[in-house]
Length: 412
Image 1 (spheres, rainbow, N blue to C red):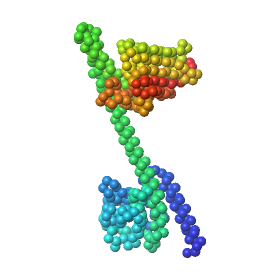
Image 2: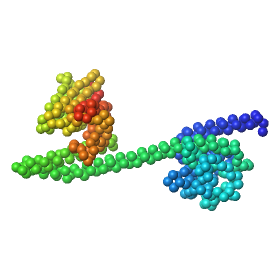
Image 3: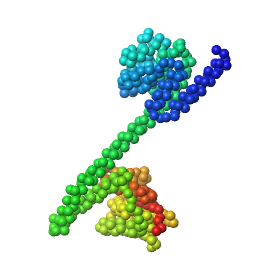
Image 4: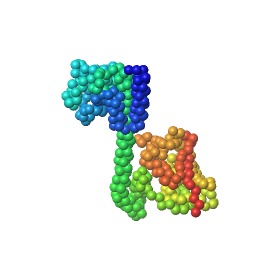
């Protein structure tokens, strides 16, 4: 072969290897990646078939991930041991191997040939590695013209190095997709549970509330106090069920807003009045600071629940005789509502996590405060549906908290 012809052949091979690299990195779907590797091996090495074996750490054996020239479904069920096989030797020694007369080699794993009917005459195998760690073996089988050579080994080694990276990336994506699907299934189960629980508990709760209300109004003395206790407990349970229902509606995207022009002062005042009685019973100083000018938002009536939730939290987590300040303000484009307390405060690392579903700063076995940990998640969901945002600020435990809501201002 002349020098020019040899140089041309090298250039063509390099161009082909570049094309292979582009092809292998063009997708993250594992089946397509494996098929591209098989085709690249056959084309570059002018052989009858190729196969890819990947290492399984659980049973420490190799398994066919893909192959041409044989039924892949049958091959996938055949484990290839590390000892007593050519592929196992390549993997264990992490070194390429040429066997140009396979039937006479004592390492030939005859079981594969017997079960597939594919006869191997010659074989070139190279390890596929990520860094120093072998992850599998790629084999070229039955060279069409002559024997496998060192030049073939170099070519297949380049393909193998590219293939190892492509397979690893595809497997990572595949594992992530499976993990995400498991999380989605868990979330669906959680949503279904909340929907069923909140629905099924409403009927018996309604009966309990009815009897408790009747007893509270009609009974006297000790029985009246007991009725009040039952009624209060039932009301708390109803509030929890409402939280579960609202959270489920937000989660499933079933919440539809009925927007209308509303004065932010009216919305906040309703929430403020609802909580005032509870605050007075605990000797809190409760202040509401609002501008005299009407400030409007385009909102659903349920937005009031956001501020009721924030005020309820402020009362629950503020020590008796504490102070709670609600302040309403506005800029040209935005409306701001903040609820400030002098309660237990929030650790810096929890300021964002407190808005997660079911999350509570206290451990569930030792906590002193009631609730499912849904209130703030619901508040955030409702605020975001109104194209606003909500966040918390605190200087740390024991230093109080401030919850702030920002909403688009509306001009009717």
